Length: 82
Image (cartoon, rainbow, N blue to C red):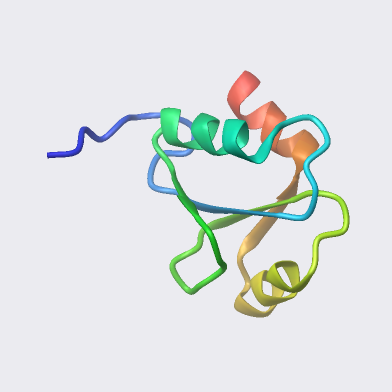
């Protein structure tokens, strides 16, 4: 059985899009997982949060179309460093 971790990303399905300037994508994904979230490779109806880096493309458009919450890298950083 997988242990459910409690954290700031608890229950969130997170997608990263675009170029992250302050994090490597793998490190950012680990932060999400360490704080209870799940990283998804593509945007779908089950996605709950999109972290948009620079030059974000079609994933961002899809997230907007689905009404998914979108934050930038700065907001992402504030979430787990609060």
